[in-house]
Picture 1 (cartoon, helix red, strand yellow):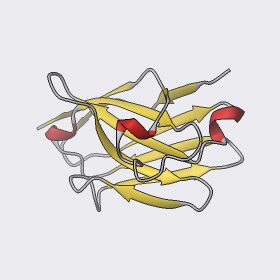
Picture 2 (tube, rainbow, N blue to C red):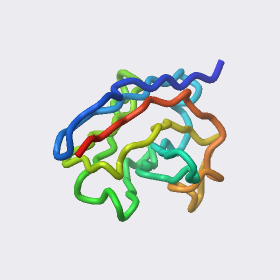
Picture 3 (cartoon, one colour):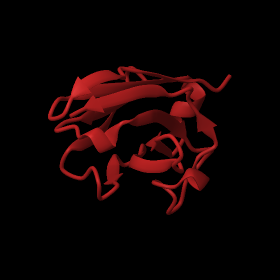
Length: 126
């Protein structure tokens, strides 16, 4: 059964940090791509960070480069998103996603992913 379970969201002041975790089932961890997306009210879901799990290469949206870091722990079958220097505009529901096989060039696009977690809320106050 495909499962993605996010945790680690919460409320923080601007400049603070949070670390999101995405626990995956054995099946989904074999996906070639894992990603973090976010969606604010009234906005489209956008890719924040992605990782090609076989080689470990990472990709980031311009808005989070230098502040967010995606990583994976193979033993724990978990993907993380370390978020530093948080800004109010980072406020959104954050989703973990896994591809069905290779995501090609869609590592930061919703079209590259088949499986989604339930989301975890991140709220950054000024």
